[in-house]
Length: 140
Image 1 (cartoon, rainbow, N blue to C red):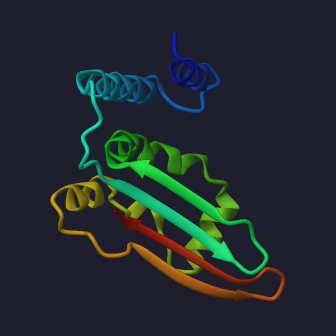
Image 2: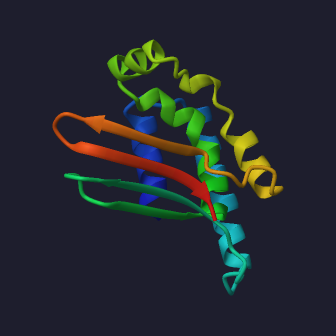
């Protein structure tokens, strides 16, 4: 049994998620595995969701996620919001960010249709401790 399936079953056992939510997660994992298994060769035109963080005093971060993985992960997004600590959610809401209103599936659909190709996040911050920090999220 895969590590992901065991983690989902453990979350059900610990009552972090309901049995219904666990079933949905397991189903999404199965669907994702079927899609991966049906593609013997990665298409050369595969697109990626890229996250770049650079700064004066921070480590450089590069994350490249295949859009096919983002599609599968989008099914988990609504459930994962519940794992963000209450304090962090309240702090984000103070800054006008309500994660529950973000429709990840719609974003993935727009990206997949080629309608959302510009930068999703382009942010620069001057921090007293870490200096200048730049965050970019885009599809390539």
